[in-house]
Image (cartoon, rainbow, N blue to C red; front, side, top):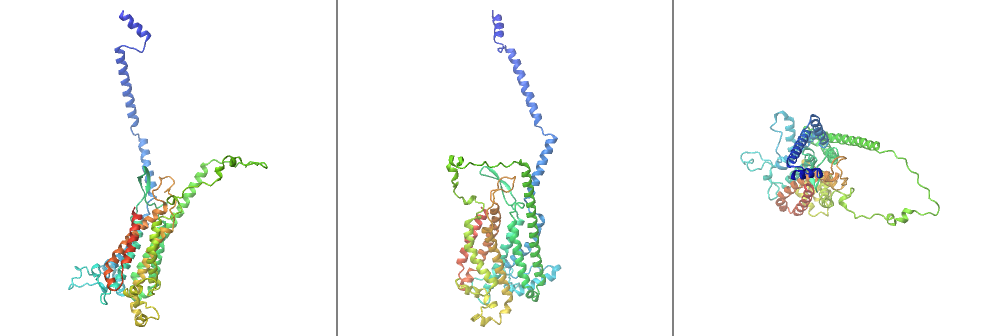
Length: 496
């Protein structure tokens, strides 16, 4: 009876099987799963074609990232030319009067020209190279130890101030080129707000166009300044060194201009190719003729949606406006501080010895720095006293005008970075992720970083000469506060 019931159950319920059938079926399932896992593992093994495809992808990504980097010849020329000026500026700032080429026997003519230039500018007045006074160990070889806390006719702290501040200003100008070009921060992907975005400066996009343009104009001005004084420097015996400086400045300006033109021409060709490809991909559509309206008829769309005729009002966000300036706070700071610096610098460059009446203690500043000796104002007591002796101070006048030139060029960097270009579009390139900073902001930040460093050096030098200036009835506290304010703002917006 139990056997017949089991047979009957199998006929009625065929899915119910015995224990042996169930065990057999489970074994078949496990075997099938093992076979499927084996097939999946086999299919996941990299084949030769897949490996070649991956290598091609790596090469393609490398080629795509190369166009962000600066050309190597441009970097080398900037390092050599601007590096030469930077080293000489560092010497003027922290080792005033120290000859650099004296121990190089292969460049005897340049060494003699350098000594002649230092004697012409009277920079060796604060350079003491004698063993009796142990000047080396006292750091008095034109270094910071030569700065005295008081001013007298013997130490001439005003003249030392002009030479050291001229070196600091030149370092700030040339550091902007070296920092931006030689120490490039290429674009790298970064995770911001949960999205992968590019951050950095790209050569092909045009982030370095303002650097090259301003550097080319500045180098041309420096070369023109030396060439206008070439007769005076030739009589002083410094013609070989001055010729080398003019050549280095013009070569760097020429290279900047050539690479600037080539990059813009290549960018125009790339845009034409991309626009042509887009036009080929879009299907040609025949323009539809507008339907003629009957007389007395009304526009159904305008009557059906009256709100569509009203202009769309959106809240203006200056952070998203492509035509806005890079930073309003930086603009206000630069206009307040650098405008005063540029005014005094232009006076020292083109009108030395002229007293600006609305600037407090300006006459004391001119007397302290020796401007009345080489450029006494006409029809004044100084003109009657120092008029005949003014040609003897041609070297002091040269250094005063060089100080004004470099301060003006530094202010031009800052003025251009805050108002010469707009933010621009966020898109870094057509196929890359969205850039964190806009086009113009990236260029401005490179200038702000270097100029913040230049302001820091200027602030340090002003603080070192504050006691000596105070002894001459010249208070530098306002100068310190304004330069420090500009340094902090440019540093914050440049590095963060």
